[in-house]
Amino acid sequence: MQIGRHTLEAFSAQLLALDRLPADVSPSRLMSDGLAGLRSLVPFDAAWWGESSGGIDGLAPHNWLSGRINLSADFAREWNRIGATDRFASESMQRLDTVVSQEGYADPEPAVEAFSRRHDLYHVMAITRALPGSGLLQFVSLYRRRASPPFEAAHRVLFEHFSAHLMQRWSARIAALVGDGSDIGDAHGLVDAAGDFVYVGARLALLLRERFPQWNGTRLPAGLALAVRDAPATLKLGGRRLGTQRCGELVLLSLAPQRRSALLPPRQMSVALLYADGRSHKEIARDTGLAPATVRTYLREAYLQLGVSDKVALGRVLAGQPPRRQLPRQSGRQG
Image 1 (tube, one colour):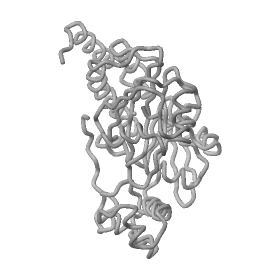
Image 2 (cartoon, helix red, strand yellow; image 1 turned 120 degrees about the vertical axis):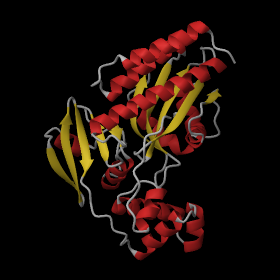
Image 3 (cartoon, rainbow, N blue to C red; image 1 turned 180 degrees about the vertical axis):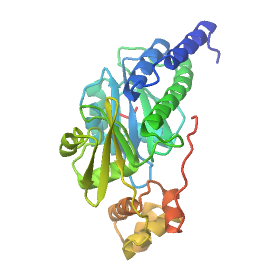
Image 4 (tube, helix red, strand yellow; image 1 turned 45 degrees about the horizontal axis):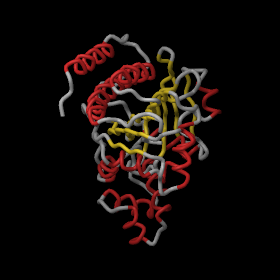
């Protein structure tokens, strides 16, 4: 498939526009400005981007932070109620670095179909990529209404390549704010003045979910949001300490390091060892006589206690080795 010279020149111009943004630009503005530029190449009616889990060890499908264009403020929270049954989102999470697309409202799950109709998500393109160092996934989803024409093959190509540049720049900006040049950290988070997450790592997300079971994942729990206003400070979160410090208009959250010990309760240790050895949740449940939900709970608790957020790090810690640091690599309809 050929893309015309005019389109290629416009593509280059939009990449240069990203490079001209101020060095201290907020990650949220970087994404919103970048998507505005993409819109001139690939017209869309609405867009959604953020971090998600699903296919990530120990975490059920969930949206943990959300940016949007022409979508309601409750869009992410609505999706979190039906995300576990959204087959399109699951496909995007399983086919990383690949643009997936879909047309129509019809879905085997009535709740997903109702969600799509309510927001008029008729034509959809999404791409999901691993977010190095975070333990989570990053996605961008583009939508067109039923009255709009479908996305074309050329749009898929432009979306794939432009989103790779945009997501890499977003990751680099997060890394600069966190202050670590090698990865962005699964024990860190960044929130804006309203308490909305600009970035969150899997380890911090797991701990917050553990301490606040009703937390929706896109904004700090109310009690913490008030405390964060006093940054810099150190807050107690269960048995952990959460440091807060200002980064311009944002607040950086950092879990204090803890001694990584493999001294888990016996049943939890058994589950963790089986999982690190490559067994699936279903296989572990069958071999141990535990319910699959209990297996997932044990793994989440092990992740929290050991300070890890993926299977590789879990295996290394159980073997008495420090988890390897992830290096950035250049390269979701989530709803």
